[in-house]
Image (cartoon, rainbow, N blue to C red; front, side, top):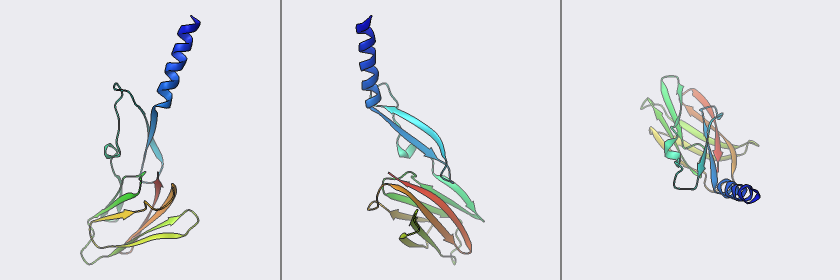
Length: 139
């Protein structure tokens, strides 16, 4: 009986070591889901592609941000942006330091924060006279 308990404990420990936890976030940066991915052949693995983009309406424009959390590459789509309306995306540290500023003139903008340390950042999007703020998680 003691051998069975020991074997079960070792097996459980091996499973826990080979598990990965991923989180899903809504547009406000609140965690809305947690997935535990086991590294065995019976487990279903999830990728960041399976997490839908976070979406928010900004007046008549639809803003999508993905993937969040990110490893560095971040995409921002602004659908319905009028041709004569420009915008700006700024990313700040939690201390308020500006680390990236990029103009928006197309519906999809790619950003790279791969050179920044792991942590939480604040992204401010300005499109015309409309503004929105997003919490970005860098893994």
